[in-house]
Image (tube, rainbow, N blue to C red; front, side, top):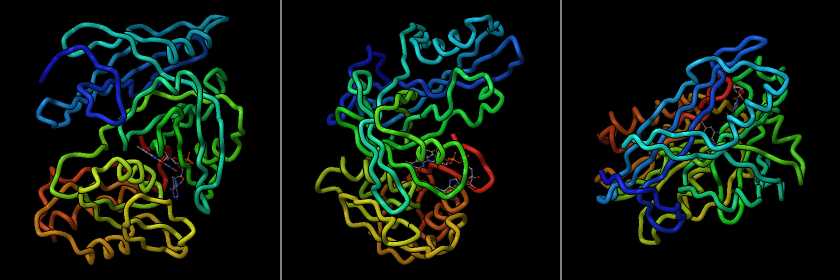
Length: 324
Ligand SMILES: Cc1cc2nc3c(=O)[nH]c(=O)nc-3n(C[C@H](O)[C@H](O)[C@H](O)COP(=O)(O)OP(=O)(O)OC[C@H]3O[C@@H](n4cnc5c(N)ncnc54)[C@H](O)[C@@H]3O)c2cc1C
């Protein structure tokens, strides 16, 4: 693998190296101190066109002591440049980003399209299929530190031009992600981690997409960037026809009509009836965790696909708060 200096990210051409700050987690805290973990995932595209991911974990050696300006210190830690140890031992700076809500529109019956704009947003790069981790709670409010699992939610990037667009499903609960999206207003500031993730297009004889409406957001971005002659197949399960996202390719839709999205045997059935080429391609499975397992089991056991040809990304599952 080449170890050249990072090149600027570009959405329309292959990139040499992509670097992302992956997660900032509060590990331990009491009234006066706090420990922070940062995981950095680096996605490389090798000269041969393969993708490889490496993880680097940085942990604050000692607890950071909070004083009167403590909360500001933490915010700086999370939003200002942090040192990243690169594989070759050198350090470089990474940033999280912030933007302003420029537009909120319903894009399906239960999904809002949220457009973020701003100087920092315009400078970001991403690869279709990647996501951002949005700060859905006020990071400066110490009361929120008591529930660190409720501070971040992950959303796929639906579109990335001068702005970033997210599509957030209102699943009907009263949890941090849906609350954030429901209460958001135009003009409001939003901070989030840089685009990240390795759930992106791979080389293959053809491309197969399967998942639920949350997965359709990432699929939409990936389909938009597929070469015109690349073959794409897939099935997406939504509740009603009004829940279909507009996609650039014709995939099959399946409807739950009120049945639960979790562990969907109906979606597995639809996938098993889908006509696919003999030769396996690359499969992208996303959405509810148990459904993904079942979809993968079908491809491996019934269709004889090699496991490494199947990319999976669980987005949510009943009873679990925040999946990433
Ligand atoms: C890589 C990645 C990309 C994602 N991209 C998107 C995206 O583009 N759009 C999007 O809307 N979400 C996406 N998600 C899911 C998103 O991060 C949140 O999990 C989701 O918005 C729910 O957050 P919450 O705080 O409302 O609920 P959580 O606190 O996460 O969950 C609380 C409970 O709500 C229920 N629940 C959560 N999600 C659903 C659902 N979809 N249907 C039914 N019940 C549900 C479950 O019972 C869960 O236990 C993605 C997740 C990951 C990991």
